[in-house]
Image (cartoon, rainbow, N blue to C red; front, top):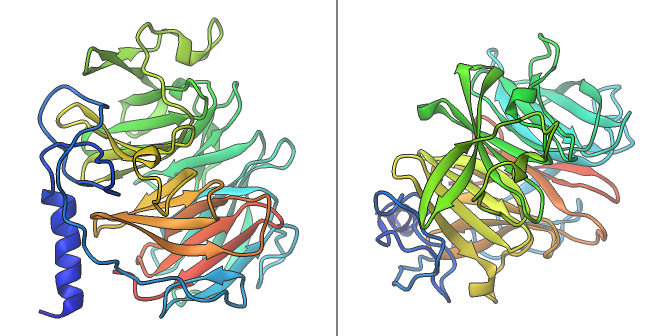
Length: 393
């Protein structure tokens, strides 16, 4: 077996087998990303254990390239779109404040890149870029307009993008990534300061984060999956250390804010990105720089990364995140030092850094359907979408 093979085996073994349900260790950077931990109950306390720290996967970041990016050796980049300018190869002018994003495979072998715009009306909404099978950009257009501060969201297995409005009266908009069906508001999924959404396919449930200092974590169970027009909205509460999901009486928030309707609602300090990996829900909270996990199978809530416990870590300002089948998570920084950081095994490893841009943040981190290209965005000054290709493992 090659050294690369050993490194990959160790990383996945640590992710899947390391630890026995421990949560966060002072001095360790990441624990058991795919291990759901012990059955029943939940805990958010710091624990003490040991962990294996594998070598870094991609090595150090190199010098700034012609696109203003620092990348590991062997990686290349191209600029896909810049706010205020036509998307190369199209007549569509890319709007400002690009944020959460997703990709969708096309039957003929290409793919679609869908992205929110965190702007106020009439500029908020969703755009898309269409790629041919060889990666050539062949089209771009707006899919949703006139909405308010579309921040993050989530892709569905049935080819739609769930776009969340980040205002107190915000809704989820379901947008057809292929542009066939018109976008539709989904108020049954709750009216609140929406951030991201993730579909847990095995349980036919959608998990939702809320970007408030006293925000909540929600789940939505459609009456007739995958129709999101109606269903049950619940909020995570704690009975001691046991997770209990409680029905939100008024998802429309016509009487009280959604997060304040249920006694015992557990507060999360600024919910951000969310994804599902190996049946476990991972999400970030920017106010306390944490990465959390929730396992529906064991009903366990855990802190998986805590920047306070790791003061020298490469990761701060946690925001959008995505995952790969390898078991790795990739977190975009809001603040920090404008990096995308991979958390894998015992390592928090910078993968991309934008240099020379002030007053911005990293958003929209996602891979194309083949897993060979990463897309990531610098949101402002100017908004710019990058594609990064290389030896992803």
